[in-house]
Length: 491
Ligand code: ADP
Ligand code: MG
Image 1 (tube, rainbow, N blue to C red):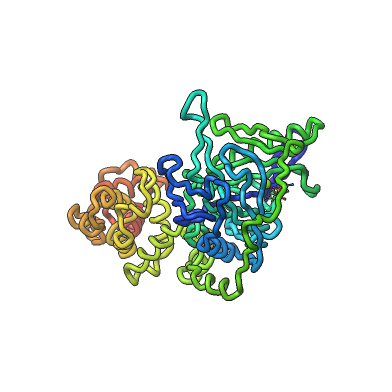
Image 2: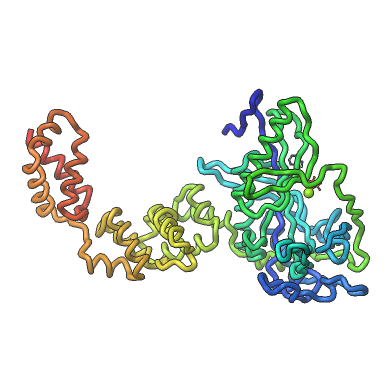
């Protein structure tokens, strides 16, 4: 695969690394018992610890630590038995402590890796440098008053996992696939709700460009992107900007950038000289975090089947392609739906590929059109299974099945009910089909002549006419066989 992009003068390669912030799915914050519920009225979930009142002491939330360990295991990463919380010092109005409690030298999770799967059947591993636990800051609200900024501390102190990748990513698509895969793993583990719109999952994107084979170039970091679409847009824009500078003889300054979602452009927020010196030091209010091997083993037992395992199981059991299986397992709701559907009838196991296609193309497009998802789909997995059985038994054609699915979708009726009510059963009776074909042939003598003179394409016309007469219900194979036979006899 060629991942290079063309500048005016040279070809360039992108080098990309992501720092993903994932909010731990937990009822209370990392160092206090305040609620983490999203969307509550401002400053209604702020304890004295979160507001940084003098003399308040943080108390570690064991549950959040367990979720970080669980996530590390899910990312095939090394869990560190010893880790340390540091203070990362900076001043901002929405950071009442004047520092963020984070982990620096000794994170709770070390090196790991995740795999992304491409459409052409190949895959690639992206290495993970570390995962550390830290507190989120509060939120400055600039749009509530024309002359004032308000501060909402509900988010202050909420537990985040920061997952840092190696600069192994080479294209905007790979960046999107990597983030999707991390999101998928987090959601299977149930350690983060994966809701990017609410900001539970967001990423800082680091990007540089180089000529193939050269050393890594100087990078810029684009802060706080909360959708895959924006990540791809920002990378494309930023790579182009860097290439233009380099090709005109300039050099890249290591900047921190902001992405404007309405213009699609990046702009510098601060440069290296202005970069913060955070003066990290171990937080004197917290002891180093020690986790025993037994505790880690115990958490391992709670790990559910993850997308990659499930993918391999689907490939083995149902002979699906790597890509089909990865689409099916990307979201837990999809693999759950597939499992229920295919297990609703013993015969369906031999038609797994058809089940996949009906879920990922027909059903997905109806759901999308109606702004729904598999969890609130009007068509249950069992009912979809029944529809597919009608197709595989030749009771209805695939074409009619599409119409049936739409009726199932809008009425909630089963496929069987609809087929019976509307008399949609396929016509497989030879005599009946012959009769129709005879009519078509005698109605179109000129076409028949043209066909016999070598215009093979006309076969489709006859099929279409005959299908029309049977209201699309003739079994296509039988129809085709009889038609060819009869036409050739005309000769
Ligand atoms: P910092 O702590 O200053 O943010 P790190 O070395 O931890 O720096 O890197 C942060 C992120 O930047 C990582 O995800 C890493 O993969 C990425 N990165 C490092 N070097 C480059 C580079 N030359 N080009 C693109 N990304 C890079
Ligand atoms: Mg960084």
